[in-house]
Amino acid sequence: MLRSTLARIRCPNCLDGKSGALALHEIKKKLGEDILSASLRCNDCESEFPILAGVAILVNDIEQYLCLHAKGISSFVKDDEVPLTYRESFLQAKSEILDSEEDLESERVNALYFMNHYVSAGKTKSNPWWRPKQNFSPEIDRLVKNFWDKGPFAKIAEWTKSAKHQNAIELACGVGGLAQILALRVKAYLGIDSSFTSIALARHINLGAPYPLSLNSPQDLYNGPLTGKIAAPKPLKNKNIDFVVGEIEAVPAPFGNFDLAIALNTIDVLADPCELPKRQHALLKKNGVAIQSSPYLWHSGVAEQLRSELPKKIKSSSEAVAYLYEQQGFQIFKNIEHIPWLFLEHYRKIGVYSVHLFAARKR
Ligand SMILES: C[S@@+](CC[C@H](N)C(=O)[O-])C[C@H]1O[C@@H](n2cnc3c(N)ncnc32)[C@H](O)[C@@H]1O
Ligand SMILES: [Zn+2]
Image 1 (cartoon, helix red, strand yellow):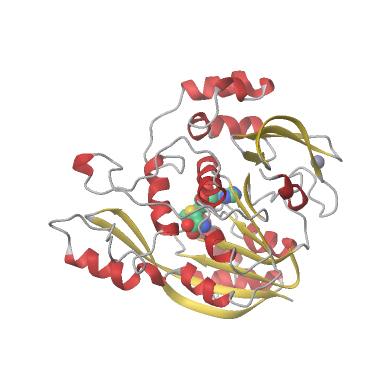
Image 2 (image 1 turned 90 degrees about the horizontal axis):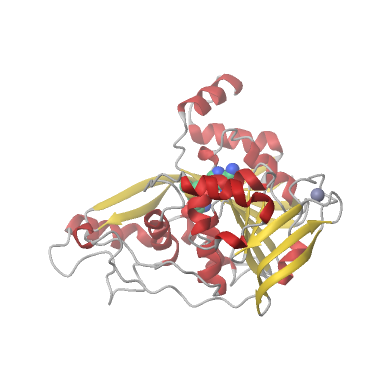
């Protein structure tokens, strides 16, 4: 975590909007201004939060977090760097890890997000990274050429063109590619996500933090899971950009402090979707702007709950989410019902989502 980030984070156990400033404590390892191993202590409740491999872990239950994310964390953090209080349960969780390709800590899933966030099809015409030299699919080729660069990031770049001197926060930022766009526009950006591996990758690409894993892409799986070569962009070297681990339900940042609060493709993974507009509203200044997108892949129980709570006149996911934002005190002023969002899983499989994207002002 960069030293300068201290001013933009808060203790997740003191979420009244005012208290919860954190102070650095026991710095064990740093690289210039980047604190790689240390502890953060809350000035009010004295809770402590570790910084491991440069990643500040700002969640309510540190022990539970370390155990649930043991797989991702253990690729970056040596056992003896885990705070002593939690080490025994961490080691127990690590010994029970099941190897699942689908979880968000998996290297291949991160590779898909890396391509989705950081690689353009238009700017790399001379190196068509999405296709093999021979036997490529003309359909996949056409989809990538036509739609890869026309997703939510391109639209947000357009919407934030004049966003100078703004303080931006992104909730569930994943591997952090939006920072590349916002860095050119806003004064400061803080990305928050619950995945340790995603935050470590975001910090590596954008800030040049150490990263022990490889950064390749899937190509022909016959040759192995990650055999494609794609170069990452150069680090931004901007002291006002950083990424920390945190949860939407207890965002570790000061209330009423941000001009822009973005959350892409996340409302449908939350157990309670109302949490998202509520948290964005609390974080924003008056007239601040929330941006939301989603393909609305609800868990059936969550959709059922929404249907039981929302007025009967609401008949679709996009109407339901617009209603949640309006109820929270937002006014939607830009709205795109369908925007393509592509995931290239390997050279024979591509996923095309069509997401709803809008911008809403806090009244
Ligand atoms: C579908 S991904 C979208 C990532 C990124 N926003 C994008 O559009 O590419 C959902 C993200 O939400 C994060 N996430 C899920 N539940 C969360 C929570 N309760 N708090 C913070 N992040 C969460 C996951 O780690 C993951 O990065
Ligand atoms: Zn506190």
